[in-house]
Amino acid sequence: MAVGYFFDSYAIIELTNGNPRYARFSEETVILTMFNLVEIAYSALQKLGAEKAREAYHQLITSVHEIDEHTFFGALELKKKYKQRDLSYADCIGYAFAKQHALLFLTGDSKFEDLPNVEFVK
Image (cartoon, rainbow, N blue to C red):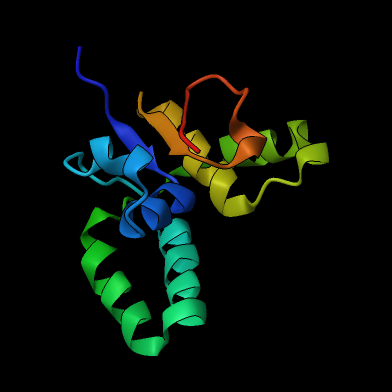
């Protein structure tokens, strides 16, 4: 059975930075939302400047998937349920999207390590 992945911002950044633990995902289809793309571009802006942020945007924009009402409210419920973990909205949306579309949520964010439907890679 083939497994698909939703790439959390953490996963994309680690893959881009050449983390060898993420090498096995380099041929996978990247699926993310605009919220994750914003986080990725902002990270590039901070660390590498505006030109690299634009490059990241243009490289990943075709991997962006829209969210629907089910994902939206699923993300809000997740944020509420795990309030003490202080999960970001982008991460909650990504996790809800992954769950809704039978994808594993690929991340190295320890706040998600023990949740179901997560491929945790540090």
